[in-house]
Image: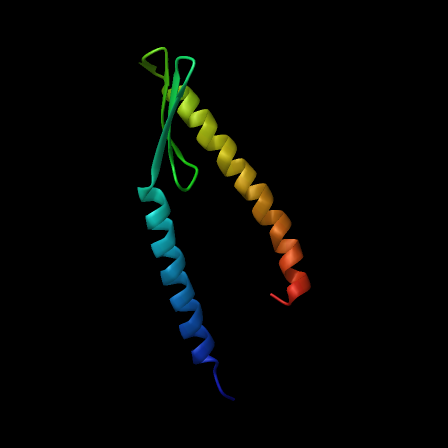
Length: 88
């Protein structure tokens, strides 16, 4: 019986590329200020800072990041079911 080492190697390469892309996305930041609220957001959609009227609000940052993670979990769960349709 032949083991699919070629597939394992491909998966490892994909993982390396995905990790590299993740690091690149984390390095991108966007800062937006609107009506006394300033938000610093990374390219991976993680909120770094939230300022309201010049005051850093860690609670808002944590709430935004929690909401993003929950949304990502729901999307991943939905995509898992659809990936089965493709034979994954």
